[in-house]
Image 1 (cartoon, helix red, strand yellow):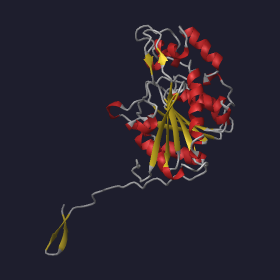
Image 2 (cartoon, helix red, strand yellow):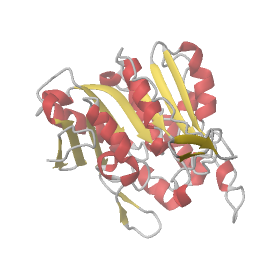
Image 3 (cartoon, helix red, strand yellow):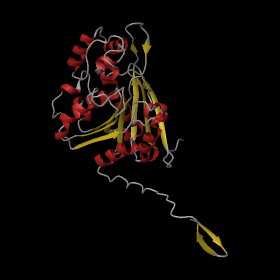
Image 4 (tube, one colour):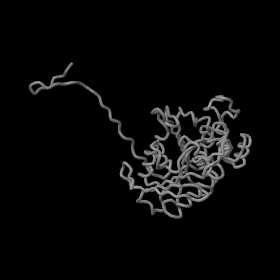
Amino acid sequence: MPITPNGTAWTKRTATLPGIGVTVFSCPDDVLATSATPTVLFFHGAGGLPGQLSELPAFVPMFAMLMDNGIAVIEGDPLPIIRTDTGASMSGQQWCNAQSRAAYPAFHQYWAALHPAARTVEFLMGRSMGGLMALYLAAKHPDYAGAAVISNSGVSSWFIGDNSPVVGSQPPTDQRSTGRYFTPAVVNGAWGVTSFEELREAVDEADVAPESWNAEIFAGRSIAFQYGDADRAVPWQTRGGAYVRNRWAPHLALDRVALQPGGTHDGKDGTPTSYQQVDAVRDFILEVLGQEPPPPQPATINRVVGRYTRIDGNLHRIL
């Protein structure tokens, strides 16, 4: 039985749903039978794992925080896609395509039928490319009409940024739109298209581009963004975070943005990353649930105010 560093016992359950994908449900043991348990439906990014939030080392503190606060987690990975160049099968590639949009609600319903704690999805949390899924289901799926959104370095648009054809290293990767950023054979395979123009038509027809939605689509709802200002994979501007947030913010009940100075996407070379923005996610979750976040830990300051020695029972200051 796994236990968080703070002593919360939890259990992870895994299931394979034929024709849908692999799903994982993690829940604190003491709330498994409680239907009022708030649940996070989590969406991984490109190349992610079915149990990304519960298994990725970088996410360990985030996951432990959720368990310690009595929050269950549903995650998973839809069926693999087929690359258009090699015909190879690739898992971990949900691109807000049709099979992904169907798979995640199915993952939720599967666990909800088994465990009361899985019934109430209060939060849709998307990491990287999974940000699009979180926003889409929050905006378009009736089962999540009241859910809050957590975008953890999440993609928020398809076509904001440079949509020019890629030639060599131009345009630079951090300036390309989402539709131009990723390997065409992968994106096209996920969407069943053969060109950027067909991709754009398919995305528009499916209505999965948040930058095109009405500014009041999330009126009265709650959204939190976490991002790093050195993230070159999901830049705050180019991936649409700044644009959609500025449009939606006047209509939101809760609008929270947490910047990670120097934060990169993957935390390589010891750089900070939004994986580590645990306090920002915790405080947002508790605020949505109407609970008070814990007070900040007092800073400890050590200062040398003088040096002394004792001679014959008397203290003498050393100058």
